Image (cartoon, rainbow, N blue to C red; front, side):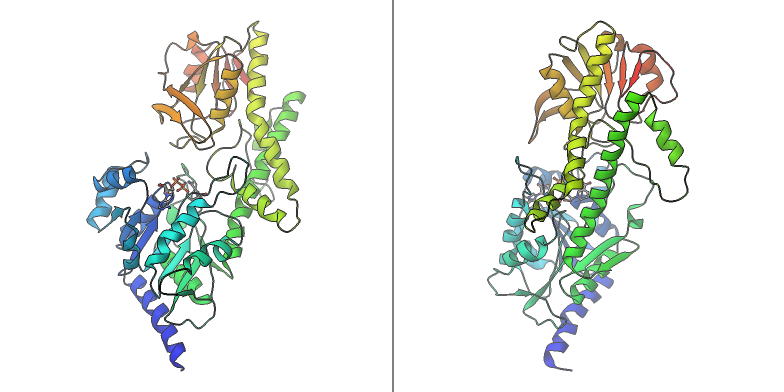
Length: 452
Ligand SMILES: NC(=O)c1ccc[n+]([C@@H]2O[C@H](COP(=O)([O-])OP(=O)(O)OC[C@H]3O[C@@H](n4cnc5c(N)ncnc54)[C@H](O)[C@@H]3O)[C@@H](O)[C@H]2O)c1
């Protein structure tokens, strides 16, 4: 065995052993909806975990044993702390980590272009503290090529001159790099987190093997792929598949409304087919950090290859039009009752982008509220998950949660998020007019319900 080959076995083999024996130090950068639960999973498996975040408030909350994500109780943070978990904004501790996993945001700019500034700044924070043999994994959703074209060149500008291991044989002047997409489905309790297979694509086989070993300690199955770009594209395929299918049912819903056919009944009937059909459901528009955003990462990158991603653009067009459809349907329903949207008292039910979660990023409810206000409606909202909605990147509402009482005071109640906590029978009984965008009132027969 050549000296170089021996070194390979030593750095990768050593790290693998540390992973197996739970003595590897795990660093998670970005303690948001993805990073914090991931840190807790590693901690549950007895790893010593350090979380890094530039948000001092989050770091302080975690240091007090508190949580800022509704579905994660403080007791879980305290249990992790007892296991050695701590959070910090000091990036020099990166050098103490064996594995560093990056979970920072990847939003779109105002011009619907990828905003990779968080990945860039994170890479710049890691580079000065890199050491040989570390494994760096990017989890943030992004276009194929980001790991190799953007992340690695910044990491390689490190003071020790370390390089990312590209060949099968790694030297002791190298570090390992992989991409592994996050697949969480917030609010879905039917699949245990452990049972969601983890796709991993390393820059070289050793990096893939190390990343597989790390994730196999917290997930039941790792799915190795040949390159980071394949792993990056896998995540986008999954989200584009959802985005396009949701657009399809949204469009068919509009047609069904004209034809007097109940699209929900159609979907339910089609779902009885035991093969070749997977149900997707229409709604007031797309929300969340992934489906409305990720497809545009690919369409942006495609332009570099003189390629126009028509499915993505068309799906985006249809999905973005849905909040406008909801407002038109409300105006029509009020009109039938000889009322106008202008001056109407409206209660929006549900502001989260999806049922039973505390996340309002890109929520279509925010767009619907803004459109209603533009039309002159007096809008209030109720959502058990949000006591107050202030200002975000794309909205500025400054509204407080309204109690769910005296429902007959509203000219129209619009169901935008079908939280399980709501008593839809009672809402239908007490409201003057209900516009239901989620089929939450299925089975309830009443003249005051308009499904749209
Ligand atoms: N939320 C989901 O359900 C979900 C699912 C799949 C994939 N993703 C992807 O995962 C990534 C993270 O998403 P999220 O929902 O956790 O975002 P988030 O906004 O909840 O959390 C990101 C965290 O990163 C921190 N951060 C930003 N810049 C930083 C820096 N330079 N150094 C350290 N910390 C920094 C922020 O303060 C924040 O706490 C995104 O790419 C997203 O597309 C999210």
